[in-house]
Length: 187
Image (tube, rainbow, N blue to C red; front, top):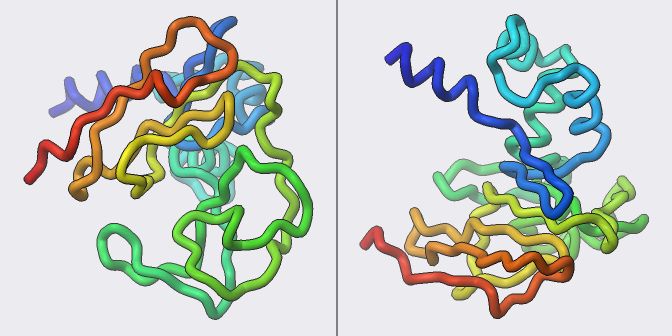
């Protein structure tokens, strides 16, 4: 068991090269920059794993964002998550930008009510390198792009969705025709 834990500690929190970026849930530039400045990109640095588990630490906020995605509470409006738990915290569609965005447009799983978001979103600049991520359990019957340089690859295969991949050929503007997918293999 300890071998698996030690291996997991070495997996990258994010990946970036001159062509594209990869993160589990959300690309947030100031969090990535903090990790770069502190020479952290996995959990092998002594103390980082502990610090990332302490809710009052910056490391906790960074890991929560990059690995789970930022959330916003909408009081009085709830939904049931993939496991049937009632929640009133909604993941933000972090690639959107603007102020006073509607909840329906800027939050996942949002079914109505709540009006405008109490926050503004910086978004993901259309001129940035393409970014690939997962974790959002999208329910589309076939994969779609979130924007021309933003691609989620999680289409709920474990909940009878599709198993998706993107065949990247060096393009800066992603193309939905480059998705490959098959129906759920978990029947």
